[in-house]
Length: 362
Ligand code: HEC
Image (cartoon, protein in one colour):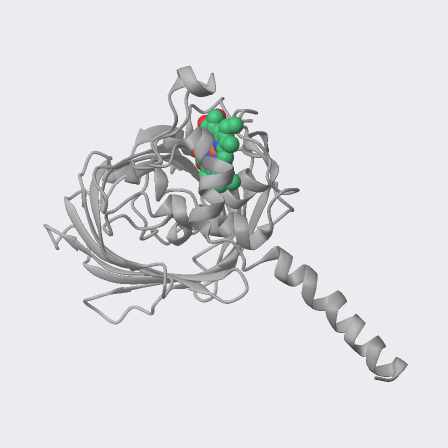
């Protein structure tokens, strides 16, 4: 054997021996057993307080909890420790001890503690656009406001309460109110048309990144039509909402529906469709920025009025460390009929009520 052969053999050993010593990569179940189970228990229900001395270890077998947060949020918590999302310091940081694949494996193992396939995963819960209704069943309170930037004076807000009632179902209450510059009488406050809604996730798959929901609203004529606060008749609004994960942290959301007034002499029936594309930009393990652009259109079923088209560039950003309080704003820009339709500024403040009270988690 020549010296060259010996050298080759040696360098091979140098490469192979450490690889053998490391062994095959650990499975998610193994990582969980070795690094997580001391607190979270092998069955995921959380080790008793007498053993850990820690109160409030979550129960990972509760599907409503374990399916809710998207992967990047949980990865941040496991990598950086609880405080990165304003959780307890007793949830340690594993970023130094475990590889990315090991953390992800352990998290997959935790997700599997929910045996039911009915719960859509939080990764299908895309950032809320200003107009397009999301497909994901939510626990949220949203205060959104629209301000006419020119022309007729109008500041209209609505309070939206969304409550998840099962794996796939959601109930909703919408209370609009605001101020209008009514001809001759000046600015007047008023209540708009209160709406009740329900939503049902028809199908969802994290594998294909798809969610589709059927929803319906009943809009009651509680607002005064003569002052511009309401439609003057009960309106039924059935619609479909669709969401799709696209490559590179981008997403697409669509909504198509109809507004069907019970008295067509008072209000016109119409079809509407809305589409939005956006991107989720994570600022390290911290804030989430989501720029989006929305396209809106509606068509009255009778007559041949032109279809109004609007473009809505907008930005959503998380305010709280827990990401449960978010702010979004944008401008609704008419693309046609610009003589009669003016740009409007729209913004909302959103609070995910499941993640704690408004003031917790900052
Ligand atoms: C020393 C105890 C301890 C260990 C070990 C531990 N955790 Fe935790 N973990 C906690 C506590 C306590 C909480 C609850 C924090 C809170 O709600 O404020 C928690 C919460 C979590 C959450 C929920 C975050 C949320 O959105 O509410 C995840 C996910 C999690 N742990 C993953 C892991 C993983 C993965 C491991 C192992 C790699 C692990 N934990 C190891 C104590 C621990």
